Image (cartoon, rainbow, N blue to C red; front, side):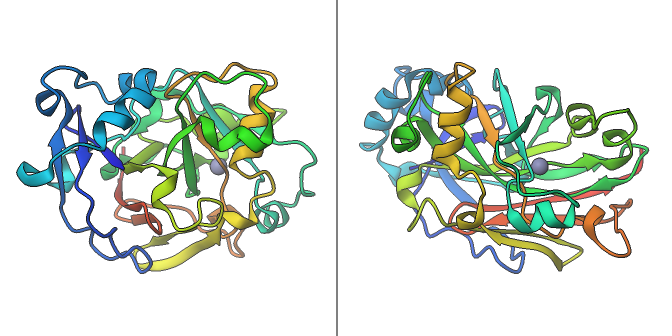
Length: 293
Ligand code: ZN
């Protein structure tokens, strides 16, 4: 099942083949049905609230008739998960990215947050912050049930779905203080786009090995596979839920593969007019243009 946020309303996306993602091709318009209307009010329109009733909703969604599905233009898509109560992000979670950042492969997950006011949709403009602004394409996992003390083998049972995320990072802010300020440097308005859809893990040929990447102005800068994650999704659910109670609708930015601008020689950052295309095979593509403040 695939769901999306159509102008603030929850929709179920008709099961069409996913967009060709590698190469930054155009995403064909989605077709979808409105959840509140189609369910006669059984489920509400809020794309964030649905995770509280995820199992019930999934059962209902299996019976949806897509005969009256309507096109959803890109410009009407909003953040697939717009207001999570808790946002977890993982640093240095791919071996090659840890190396390019000058760090050892971590023995425990490096965890920080992105403040939720930085969330935005999968298409549109993002205003540059004053510092050096960088890209980080990431697989984002969305929690589908309360989780506390979950074992690794059960980790996937607590994941409602997966979406594409960008962990846009102002490296100047990130490294300005005595210790790295991940949370602040990665939370300017618009620095956490998520979308275009949320895909349940069963839709993917292999939920533990999906390809992701991003392009700047059509030139590939990152390409990786989640099979290379140091701490894969079920391990993150186990490690996080050992400490924090995970809540329905929480999100986990699982980390970025190598190829960030800060790790390049010479370093390369985003400038006004740059277009960033971010994709995950089987999920979809986001596209953003950066504009001056
Ligand atoms: Zn990141």
